Length: 438
Image (cartoon, rainbow, N blue to C red; front, side, top):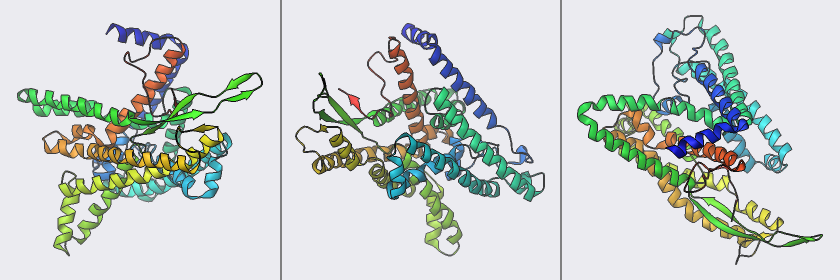
């Protein structure tokens, strides 16, 4: 406890770090306040309440702003959708590939294209959101005027959220976009804990304690999945420039066990909503369609979870393939005079990296699938649905990843000022580091 207090003192004794933390808290407060401001012309008492399915997942990311019909109803999600589209285009379209290789100028161009695409995606999603989420009885003004004005407000709200995220990245601590998603998820965590404790009552104290013990070990497992890497040694040749010798160092390429991050779960859950939407329309015509509809309407059903696990495994391989390019890694190593001991530069290096990546992706995909279906298993064991969402899945992975990244940045400030790090046992390693020196 004494070490923890000293660490907090050290953190706030660094003026730059203190300012960044306060800026982050201020921007997050603005974001949370905007989540409770309802769109003009909407009666909050007549809203339908918490959404289910994929809409419920979005509502979890936005901290209830989606179901509240707030001015931040779409939040930062259109920007994430635009970022995913641009990322896929950099893999498939040569024009975007060239832009990505242009360095800082290319990155600025891609960011500008992402912002413009965000506006168009937000406009399209705002009309769909107003049509499907806001019930007609909750609108107190002319429906046409409400739809047009609210679409403008929602678009402005998303742009403002994007601005807040960029400000957190520039003047705060951590990645701004990730922080906005995490604060939306964390905002529901205390309520979920209270509901779980109240539902158990005094007679269920032992079971409640066991729940929190299980939750602790699940969090440890997610941290292991997030941090686990396969380090490939890279030796750099010595170069004599003038009277000095450069290079000759051994570094490592850390290939992550889960290179795809949380994206496979998001993609899989997005597709899982489609059978649940189509099957009910065919339920009256076919008994089989009715069975499918009932299976996909319940996220705890075996059919739902088996198909979800299979999709996650497939998407993990797909997203790893487009996010990690062994050919590019091999070319960069060859250009910088690096080589893997015992492997020839060029094609053999690319094949070697690809083989290792294929081997470590399978256990990572299986582990990710298990984490994704843990909330449904927790619900079957009698845990409330609100608290079960934090037993795995997208929510827990995002929370752990963002917290680790933020801790890594804070520790880097402490180490630069010659203070002791956050962890006595060793350095905190986040997701941002690409090469770890030996």
